[in-house]
Image (cartoon, rainbow, N blue to C red; front, side, top):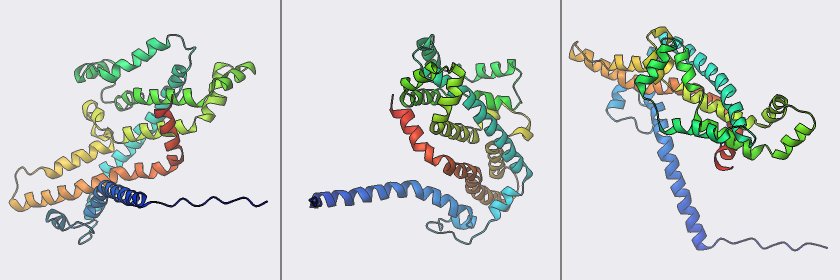
Length: 299
């Protein structure tokens, strides 16, 4: 017997108007977000004089890669890249080792002193000791002017910890844990053989968050590092930009040339520092929305 097909739902005039307005609004929001990024790209390969004159709006003018050449021919840039990669990789590895087990422990109702631990982690979210006590602690531990002064303060974010905790509470059912224990799994076996394989989404999201945070960080390096050979990329770019903007002394032509160079390097440095992060995102994209939404909204 043939089934009766339901009649298609017709959009009213009001629905069509709503869809049009919604599309225009979303298009405007996308333009507001994407145009500054597009402008940075076209300004970085345009003649500095054209950029300063406001001629670069929709397309590059007098294309030149001199800014990239000036940046990439410097050895300190490549050294900064290497340092930042080392800092980022070590931070991500140590952060996952610390954050994921801590999040799992806080997600379990049987964890002794769970409420006290939650309060202990929440307090630093609202109160800090300040820069001088922080520096004194790092100095007393002998970490000043070492790579660990950049890495160790970044291996635990309370926000990421709570997101991981919520993910475990909403994604690892108690029945699965109890079944594993009945089968003889201990706490370590349960965590490594069952919990971690089911947590790829939150692991990818945490790795991305910590990697981006460390890659873009420069403040701890600026405070604790004196050896320029240990500077991360962001701090190297900051020093180059400050040096190029210096207009002390020299003729008017020299000052103008420095200003043109600073304006070009400003856009080039954004691209040089952002490309590696943009290349990383596609590898974790399929886990990103799942891990963020479950870790932040459920529980």
